[in-house]
Image 1: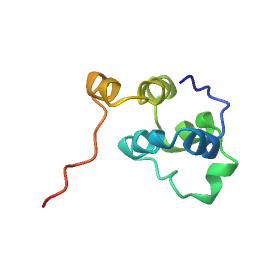
Image 2: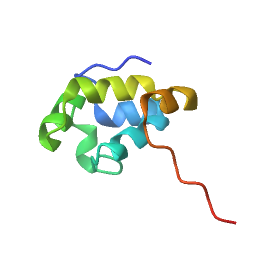
Image 3: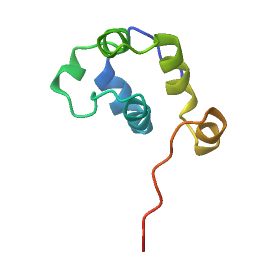
Length: 81
């Protein structure tokens, strides 16, 4: 999926819930934040000191687990039995 700097953070996460792990991987507290409905991706990156282009690449790559493996995005830890 393609994301732009002007996309609203809340819409990104609502339209593609798998992107939440990218926000968390970049240590961005946007998941569950009430400001996410007003902030764009550009705003969030600037607020958190994140390189916007790196972040957008990670968002765009998170569509499948194969992409996550190739790009080095963290996956959820395995649950213990």
